[in-house]
Length: 87
Image (cartoon, rainbow, N blue to C red):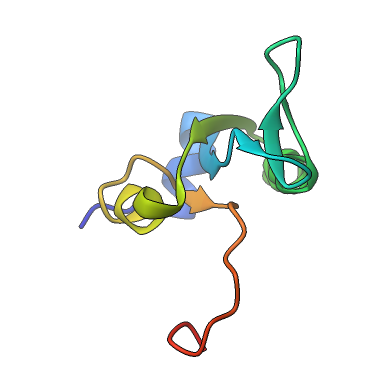
């Protein structure tokens, strides 16, 4: 399991945030190839608040946790539906 610390993220100048690319209104890629949606707006704000650039990593429901565990993403902002198992 690989995680970057907040200090490492700030030092690198970029936070890697996993978002959906096809789940409008949460995360999607628009006709200009730009990430848009609620989760993307929030991701940009996280980067802004940390003083770093937000780099988007396209994720799917099946690989969200894997991307965190392998360090491919520092944070996942791809909505999770509430289920009894996740509660």
